[in-house]
Length: 302
Image (cartoon, rainbow, N blue to C red; front, side):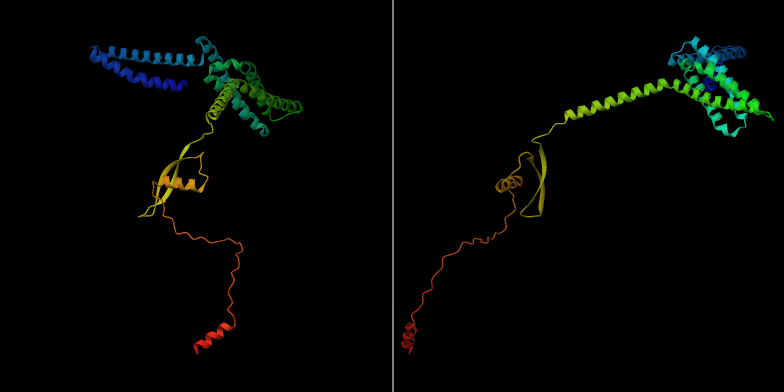
């Protein structure tokens, strides 16, 4: 926890506790006002210290660091804090515009490493080269570069020294960047491990789902059938059929429709058939009357 935030929280807790202790001591224990004030101050200070002790133990236990190790790490962090402050002041005082972005990036990397180690003290052992070597080199070069760059007159030697210093600082920036990656290496490995576990879990679940899915046969499904009743329009109801056994003949389909309609089937319309037989028929002879038959009949009429 942030030390300032921790101090504020403990103060907010210890302050009301002192008032409560004073009231209990003065009215409950019948102590004098001065003695009650002393008890209240002592109790609030004890509570303030106890809260700090408990929170610190919780912090050390969370990060797996002993109290002795934390004391050693905190000492180096305090020294690094002063060095970073000097580095920031020197880097921002340089007026060489082409390298301003590189200097700002260097300061940002240094501050980021220190903040990460401050939140997780155990990472200090992964950043020992940064605290004991690289930070000192960066600070020394930056301060000397700022001093030489601030001179009003520069000869050839100073210009060459400044150019070499800029190149060296650029290399040190990449080195500090590698220090940051070294600190974050465990996080990258843990993330890759979690990704592999998640992928294997998804693969296993998909395999189990594919194994449980089988082709389903003879599954009864609901089919909506519409039947016209004698007294009204089409009536919709459901009947069950087997998808694997479909009626293939007209008679089977007719029996199925009759079964689904519960005996109420649509009355059939009148059917007409057209003879399409083209077989030639035998000729029928027509009798011919004789020629004299007409004359005899005419004479009979007369």
